[in-house]
Image (cartoon, helix red, strand yellow):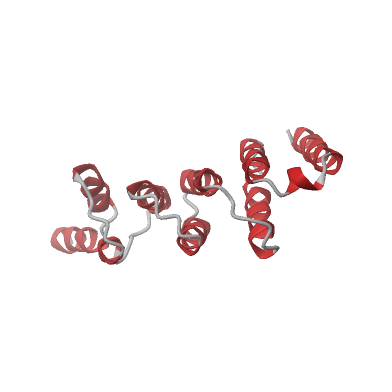
Length: 153
């Protein structure tokens, strides 16, 4: 598996060198690279592509590129990186609605960590959870867990 990833990385680098400047500055190319790296399990490299684009002021990455990375971090239960991508999306004015919040909440759920102030955070962004989201919020509600454990103990 490790050799496949190395081989994949080399092919991507060669592919990037072979194309002209116009392809390297194309959001669709960045999106394709992000998806390829995520599929290969290289989420950090996928994220670094977007960071280089934003820092180099080469353009604006696609919303889907950020969502792809956020989904993968959420599946892993990586709260820190999920929050980081979420903040990047807000900085880029990508407020896609409940999808981002659901993915972020999924990261908290996978990590089995309480999501302090999540409802208030949503309200401050004018997002109001539906029934499904309320159910998910109850699963990671720290106060409810604490109350249940205190009443049992």
